[in-house]
Image 1: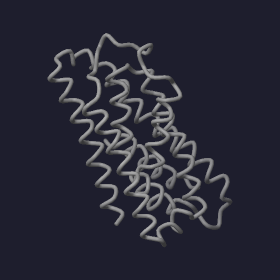
Image 2: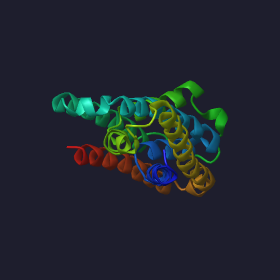
Image 3: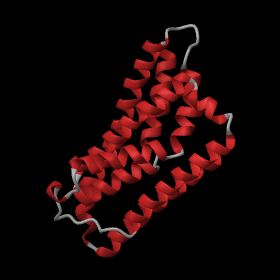
Length: 205
């Protein structure tokens, strides 16, 4: 992989990690409720699920799936249902509480699992991994080195982007002592998750 291609990959997934979406919404909600460190667990789950998406892109499975539009549409609808469930659980869930700490957070496997399930079921990765990432592979070059470079790059950029959101949310949650403001934040985060999920389906039709 040439340096120019790698820089393009960094820019693409760096911006993707900073773009509000279901993954960002989940990390923000976790940081608002429990602080910075617990929010890193769903972020790690999201990064782990990207390994699966990357493998699909490398093997051409994503392109193969696109050859079966009805099955692909069904998977997108399932993914949207997962996003809706998580979004509404945020909108109608507990309000951010500055007095809560990491000790009040759900079990670590549960937080991590939320990130994995969301990213595996979300239609948004189809845009990046199914439609955009295959263009970065060079057919006449060994696959494994390219795959490893992409895996490291995508993981680091994703975690950096989500980490920025988690840190910022963890810092400002003390400003949400007003229940009305806290409720509004929950609604905004949930709405962003829903809208980004709908956009992902619409953009890949």
